[in-house]
Length: 287
Image 1 (cartoon, rainbow, N blue to C red):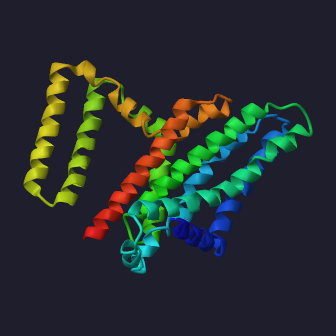
Image 2 (image 1 turned 180 degrees about the horizontal axis):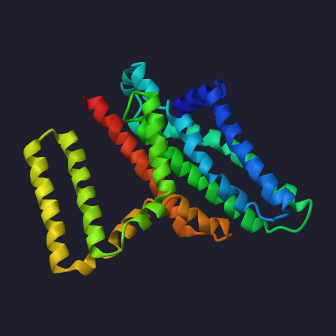
Image 3 (image 1 turned 45 degrees about the horizontal axis):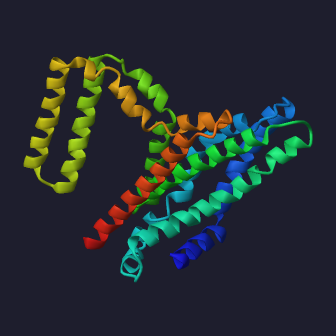
């Protein structure tokens, strides 16, 4: 893992991708920091970080699009997958290299509260809690980008799909408000999700009979629940979509709350994405 980590880190530091990622975050944060904290004399950096969080939608896909997709395109993944190292070490080494790149702008951001302290009284606990939340959000987004890069050999497709997925999680609260909280609204949403789930399963197992049977069972179960106990469906689509609200968990950190639930949530996203990435590479190895 150490050799893969060094190789990946060197590749990002000897090309423009790593520097563009770092510069993009710091430039946009610098604009908000100047407007909110310097010109308006606001003592906390949290709101500047909150307004800057949308930068991940563009910066993360650019950073992660080549991490595994390029290996597939150049056919170097065959050599990597047959190397005497576990798939988990490969994925972890690549992810830690990306996380190290992200640590560079985060370290610079840690200097901002010290700069503000030279001109007034600030809450260091609140400021650094906000920075922690910003870092965890970025780490979760990067893990999603790594997973998406593992399922395609096209860097462009990896970047576009990563942007779409991150954008959906960013505007999740607005999407949830689009659906009514009634049982009928939840039924409609779950029927669509069940159909998409069955299509995904069908693309993996290549068995139309099993896929069709699964679709019938799921759709029938939803209809039965709707007519027998509709209260079970009320507001459930909002509850389901809230699971994917990554940026929403940043708010507590911005307000200076050391949110253990948020920390566990972000770490769970990272672990799950790393697990899915390993499974994706394992499937390719056996194929």
